Length: 180
Ligand SMILES: [Zn+2]
Image (spheres, rainbow, N blue to C red):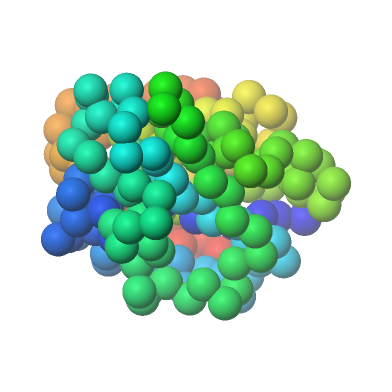
């Protein structure tokens, strides 16, 4: 059983948002196309309180109830079976979807006998990487779909390090063609 995890495809992480990944919205059609290949589709969202120590490190983004926290309008949300809300407390960074506070992602995956986890979304260096590292740590065969992710800082050392860190941890970097 394989599961698709869509990380933080929210307005604030897309062009025009508060903390955009340049070209972040280009992941949307790729993810929409991938959805048909999966029996289980989960999506995480940052859902921050307006006052959080998280905003000592980052511009204010994805505040609960704001448009910035909504999914990108192009994402086919009708196929998302469960939503994972993270960063919900005032000292909670919530980079990884496994840190969601409304649901326990590990339990959902284990209950559904998931073996293979495919990760997509935003952003490569932070929430995608943290989610992928937690996935592999929890024993799932973990894939990151490289044409379905985008970094905050394209071509930066941070992005390169994130990709090599994931690879070294045994995460498989694949393109969406891999799933056809
Ligand atoms: Zn955040």
